[in-house]
Image 1: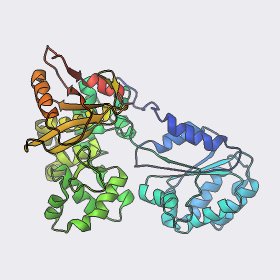
Image 2 (image 1 turned 90 degrees about the vertical axis):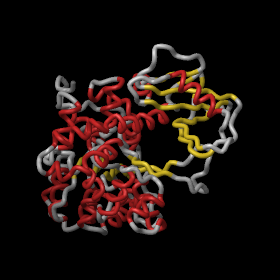
Image 3 (image 1 turned 45 degrees about the vertical axis):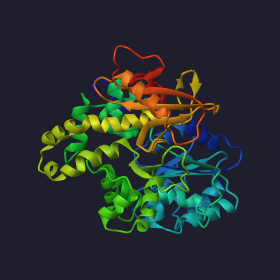
Image 4 (image 1 turned 30 degrees about the horizontal axis):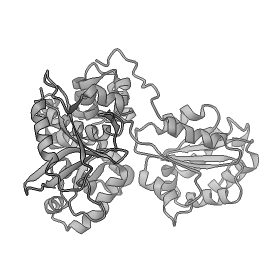
Length: 462
C-alpha cells in the first residue's frame, strides 16, 4: 500500500552524478558541463539538489527567443542586481555582458537547452564562441533530447565538441531503489518494478495510490492518465516522427525479436532498419542480446528486446487495447493485464537475475554481469540458459535459471542445469556453479544449488 506515504519522492541515489556536478561548481576555473537523459529521470531535481542557491538556474521553454533572453536576464538579476535593466538583442550580447559582470564562481545552468536550440539553431556556435574566448563563469547545459545533447558534445563536427569537462548521462534508477520509493519489498517490489521501472517521476506518481492496481488503472489505462501516452512523448523528444520507432517497439514487445522477423512484418529490408534500431539502442529503449561467448561484431544471432520495464508493459498491454481504453473500458483491459501479468513479470525477473550476478556473492565468488545463452549443445540438441556468468577471477562459470512461478521444483532445476553443464558448446572453466533465481522455493534446497529470491535481488541492485 502506497497511500500512507508522502507524494513527494525523496531524493534517491545519484551520488556519482552529484559528485561530478559539484566538481564543476567547485572548480577554480570556469567549466562547461553537459547533462542529459530521457524525460522524467530527475535531471532538474538533481541539479537543484546539487547547486542549491549557488547558481543561476533557468528552465527553458518554447517561447520565442527574445522572451527567453529577457527571462534568463531576470534570473541572472537575482545574483547580479540590475542585470535585467538592459535589453539584450541576442544571445551573444547576453553572454558577453554576463562574462563582463559575472562574480567569481558563478555558474549558469540552462535546463532543457534543446528548446532554445530549436528556436535558434546557431546557439551552440554562440556558446562555443563564448567558451573559446575565455569564459568568466561556468555553464551547465541540460536536456531531455538525448540525441541532440549527445550531438552537441560527442559529434566531432559539432561546435561544442571537446569543450565539455563533464558529460553526465542520467539513467533510470537501479531496480532496488523502488523499495525505498514505494515502501515495498520482495515479490511486491519486483512486480512494481515490472510496471514502473526505475524512472523517478513514475515512482513519484505511483506513490499517491493505495495499490499497484489503482496506480495502473488511473495513470496508465485511463485515457486521461498522465502516463497513458508516455511512449509517444519519449520518442518525439528524439525523433522527427514517432511512427517508425513506435512500430519497432510494438513489434519487439509483441514477440518479434529477430531482425528478419521485424523486417518481414514491416515489409522492409533488414538493412534499412539498422539505423532506427541503433537509435533506439542508444536511447536505452531496446537492447541487442547475443548468445554468451559470441562477439557482437561478428555474430549474426541477435535478439532485440525492449530494455525498459514501463515501455514493455505499455506495448504489451496498452497498445493492443487502445480502442477499448478510448471508450472508457479500463477495468476490462485490466482483466487482460491480470491474465498476462505473471508472464510479463517473469521476463523482467529474468533480466534482473542476469543483472544481479555482478552485485551478489554466489557460492563465495564474485561474478561478472550475467548473459543469456541459446544455441546447439554438444549433442546437437537446442539448449537455452537464462543466466551465464564468468567469475571475476576467471576460474569459474555460473549457470542459472530464473523462475517466476507459484512454487519452483528446485531438484528439477538442479538436474537440468547439471545436464546442460555437460553440453556447453563453448570453452569454459572446469569449475561450474549452478543457481536458481526463484520467486518461491520448495521447502528443501538441494545441495549444490544456490537459490536467490526477490528480497536478495532487490536489496543488491542499488
